[in-house]
Image (cartoon, rainbow, N blue to C red; front, side, top):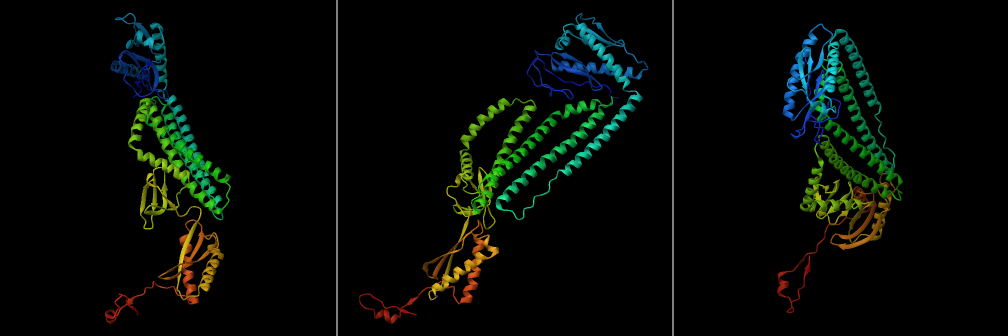
Length: 538
């Protein structure tokens, strides 16, 4: 009933070739071995290793294993079907080669032990090695028959039931632990800007730690159910070979999966470290003004995002190299080739290098950050994304504008630390200028004193006076210093109040004016000889 399984695990003991492990051992997938070096393989009974046999090459080894497998299956089935508890296994002199010994089981030859078999196992005496194999084989056959008895199977069934109950309880405990470790969100109300930055970083740390715990709990569940199932399968002789074959088939995917999980955990831990380091920087920074506080919040988001991107790329690269190494691939040529390719790419991708350098300087010098409103050449908008290669802006029409960092020569930041609403208010020429100036100033002071707007307005509005004489009348210039990105909101409200106040005070907001001079035809004919014309205004 599938009691015998012979697993071919080709090993090249005398070379640096990649090797393959046995179940729960240290070996890798089979690789061709040079013909000058022998290879060996394990012969198994019910998933248990019995002894190794050798051959000069892989094909010969496969043929020899197939022969031994057929013979051992026949012998074991006959022994298991019989009533005799004992079985006779003994080494005998090979008739064709006096240096070899035959392993005979109940008068049936199982295999021939050669001097090469003994030598590769560190045994110079063929007789001694053959006797060791015979003794071990006899004991394993007796054990295998005992394990097929009803009493033994009942005992193992009870053990399997206990293991299953333990799996269920452990899985339940892991699930309970997973629910208990969920941290409540930190309230954001009534916090200063610096506190809000620290809280945001703390929440990011919590999310990353929570993600790590969730993945580890999922891994623990997989280990509990997968490991418990394999353990149960190994309790019974009929299924003991299943873990061996599963390990052989799934070994490489499992190793790659573990490397991927480890890479993921390391990347998440790097996120936690980045957030914690940034939080320490925020807490230790002396906040002189509220503008610096707001600016720091933008810089933290930008620097944290770029640093995490670098950590992610580095983690994936290292993880890929580790995965290749685990699979037995020699990564030294890959690294050498990658360095050469990198030189070629660097020569062919100078613009990318310029982008990266300029992006680094933008972040280092705090030219702008995510959340700023900037103008770059003919483009302007809110900075939605910033990394070492590109800057992405969202303009007032909702268009996403992508600009390579190397193309950014001059940038106008409209929201660095503070902003300003710059207003030009027209009044007619026949208006009392002093009264108009006082009214405009009082509107600004009143707005600055209101709770709704005093958080947005950093300083009392400045009425600079008459800026110019224009076709619309007298232009009164007003400056209002505001929080970053609040200048447009403040300016809209200020204009609304100006219109209401001017209407109440009877002050007109003039339209553009233009003087038109018309000449009568008769006047043109009466013009003096000196060419002077007398225009008439209408």
